[in-house]
Amino acid sequence: MPSPEEREAHEAEIRRRWDAQALLSEGGATGADMAAVIDAILRLDLEACRRLEQAYWDTRELAGAAGVAEEWERAFRYSAPYPDYPGDLYAIDPWSRMAFNYAGLLAREQTWAVGAGAVGIVPVERAAMGMVLALSVRRAREGGWFHPVSEEMARWLARPWRTAMGEEASAPEGSG
Image (tube, rainbow, N blue to C red):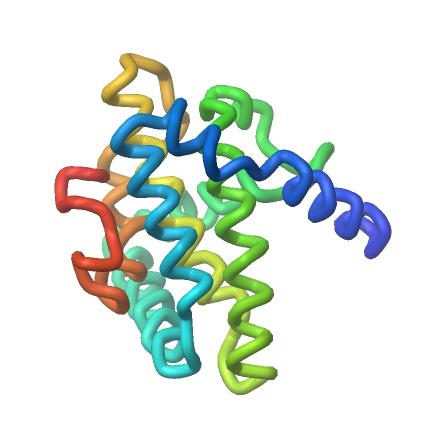
């Protein structure tokens, strides 16, 4: 577990690396979809956070019943700072990693800002990160790259966001 200082340094590095223009210019249509999710995170209100929290827990329960809960949980380790992240982290392209980590950081901050403890931060964070990670699977598929998360798992990861936010705030159905 990283110390508070290490966590703060990790978050500062995420902010330093975030470049929305690069994501839009280098990420193609999928990069634009990732940017749209990030924009939606910035507009979350308390009601949306509550919907995301509920959708996260509902999906977690369904994932358990389907026998994929362990794999689903493992996918979120890609946000961990060094040295806790999985070794295949670098299989995810830099634009996707940047968007994934930035989505998590913003979701934590926005949830706290609108919910101030009234809603769980981790479920909202994971719902947002799950959608971006699912999009990174689509980006890898389109570019012919390896991705450590399967297409099936991408659908599970996107489910809480899609359930709570609807398709207009998310990517097209074929994204994961």
